[in-house]
Amino acid sequence: MREQNAELLVLGAGVIGLSCAWRAAQQGLRVTVLDPAPASGASWVAGGMLAPVTEAWPGEEELLALGVESVGRWPAFAAELTEAAGRPAGLRTDGTVVAATGSGDRAELDAVAAHLARLGRPVERLTGRELRRLEPGLGPEVRGGLSVPDDLAVDNRLLLAALRAAGERAGVVFAATGAAGVLDDGARVVGVRGTDGTEWAAPTVLVAAGAHSAELHPALHGLVRPVKGEILRLALRPGAFPMPRRTVRALVDGRPVYLVPRADELVVGATQTEVGFDTTVTVGGIRDLLRDAERILPGIAEYALVESAAGLRPGSPDNLPLIGRLGPEGLLVATGHHRNGMLLAPVTADAVAALLRGEPVPGPVGVADPARFVPAAPRR
Image 1 (cartoon, rainbow, N blue to C red):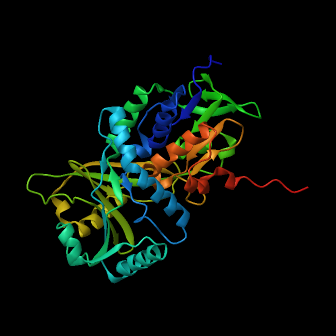
Image 2 (tube, rainbow, N blue to C red):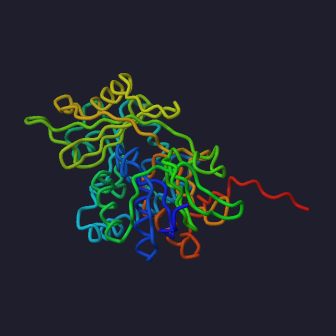
């Protein structure tokens, strides 16, 4: 086994792993991140929505509270990261609108709005004409919707670059190797075996490997699964209708679609299927996304299709992430964020930093304790 060169090994360099590594290094820990392709995978192809309210559904009240807590931390998180990295973090604060086409879609949005009002989180309901005043590019099929100014967005690729830079400035070491598994002696963690056969020694390991997390320790088996999402990037061409200023989420005949503006591109997503670790981009996926997006923003027909990709979101059994201690002493997990990795990065990183200090996690993060999946010991 290699001589110990880290106090914390982080497995995975997506948005969660990078955020946690940066926060841990800020506390003075020697941190090494293992990932053969940092800032890739689901984080690279993400839409970048920071939208706890417009993603809220009845029955997911705990996830809503966790998301609202994290989106409230985003402005300070982005400002600190921009300064630490010396480059922009990519936060966009223009807000979000939700559009609906037919009467069934409007009824579904009305039900969500009523649910949020009951939770004390009212949103502004708008007619189609009012929505078009905010976003003139919305098409005539849009009959109504919601305005949610506090649901934000982030340019995921600017964010990943900033997190990498801030981590390196804070002393994080990046090792271009994958992790084959966490090593323990039955009671506590002793290190990690790399995919190249190298063994790394460390007293603490954080598993933040997204959809691949369940492969890295038996305590995670069955708790994280891949959920495929296909996504497109469109580029504005000369003479085409300008991009929206806000994130546009929509329901089109019951199907969700979102359009997230960047400086020079529009991200359109996302399909959702459970097909294992398949990341093939399908003709049907592209067709469905473009069809629904064009009904909401007809002007995109003149845009250029510059990228199509598929990522694997890490799903959990109850749609809540897993953030906390699990299994042998020294094993931490921060995974299972499903479609909310970007949104929950600040609160997840703060929670992991607190655990490393031996302190309780922020209040709303308690619902994400992996211990909820550990069977209670039988009474004697």
